[in-house]
Image (spheres, rainbow, N blue to C red):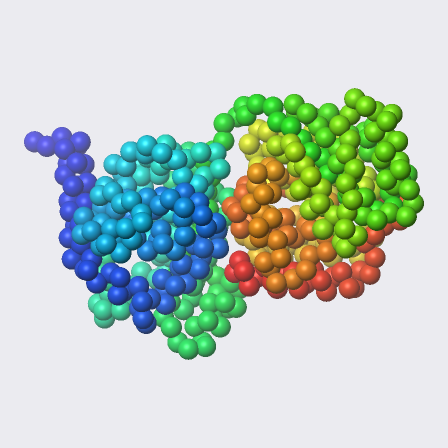
Amino acid sequence: MSTIFELYEQCRKEHRQEYIDVYGARAEERISDLSGAKGYLYRKLRDMVRFYVEPGKRVLAVNADAGQYLAWTEPSYGVGVETAPKLVEEARRAHPEFTFHTCAPEEFEATEQFDYILILDAVNNMFDVQTALERLQGACHPGTRLIITWYNFFWKPFLRFAERRGMKRPSTPQNWLSKAHIEQLVTLAGFEPTAHTRKILAPYKVPILSELVNNYIAGLPVINHLCLMNIMVARPVPAVDRGEFGVSVIVPCKDEADNIEAAVLRTPEMGSHTELIFCDDKSTDGTPDVVRRMQKEHPDRDIKLVDGPGISKAENVWTGFNAATQDMVMILDGDLTVPPEDLPKFYNAMASGKGEFINGTRSVYPMRDDAMRLANIFGNKAFSLLFSYILSQSVTDTLCGTKVLWREDWLRLKELLGSWGIDDRWGDYELIFGAARLGLKHQDLPVRYMERVNGETKMTGRLKNAMIMLRMCLAAYRKFK
């Protein structure tokens, strides 16, 4: 009598052989399947993947098919793992610049680390998804991102019909997994989801109509649950103790002379070292002189003064980020409406690995009467809800100035500046969009928002600003949905 283990092994071997037979049978036709009318779906999938994967990185593709997934990402170094030997042969012939191994995902042994791991159209036909994911831990460093795509169960009868009509290549029996299933499997394997969205409502090309449906209709609420493809980004769960880090506190200021001394005295020392970088944006009230006086009066503090371009707050902040030398960069607005005493909370959230992009939110604690106008409060809440939908993650306050990220992630994010089709005069949206596109773990951190004590607010022209934010939403919708 066979043992349970023997039956399990037999089942696993039968599954692998069926995979080899089914996908290997049409390996020579695979490249042609990816072009022409049949290739429309794959071109849309390519666009999904390239949105999240930076070119020039180290990429591993699990169930690499004919090598197209690696080619899409333009890696500096690419490795593919594929179960079917004939597909490996085709991949090596079509893409000799990459390395391919014949191996089932559940048996993969990682010997090197990668920046991105692609699991595209693969979890649907894996024998043991959790084991395959666990095997990938050895291929990860703390910044690695998993990119996972899978089919929506709603499409099961349509895909079977497409197979029978020759519109889709034959497949093995599929794992029909929900978002909740994938989240559970990812979590059990030691990863943490950072982003999820649904794409492609029209998988076959109908001139004009398909693009209209996929680009503008597929992302709408409720309707997006009918999309064919899911895509999830996940990261390895970070270690609890990550040591001490240096901090660069960026203080954008324009005519904030009366707040500079308070910023110096009230900003705590954090981590292994704290530098204060005041970015003066062509002030006319003597702000730079006060900063220079603080440098003389507090030689024990690392205080720097940089000149902003006088264009916008965003450009001023980027000047400070580029001057930063420490591991972590924080924004502390020069009006000090977010208390500097709250900054250690942001440091701890980053240093403990709870988040990689920490966004302050003023929507949790009650505000004093003069802190924010009522119209601004309602407008901010409305746009926060809209952005939460667009980014598929909770964003409760888009315009709180206090935001924190790793300097190394800023160096990646700055390459995306200006790519959203709209000029962001504040910089908040560039950071939020960029962090989402890089798959950074977003966390909202509640802060107390106080009324300004000195100086006057720079947030004037509420109707004009609302229109700018609305255009930001439309730009983000086109990119993410």
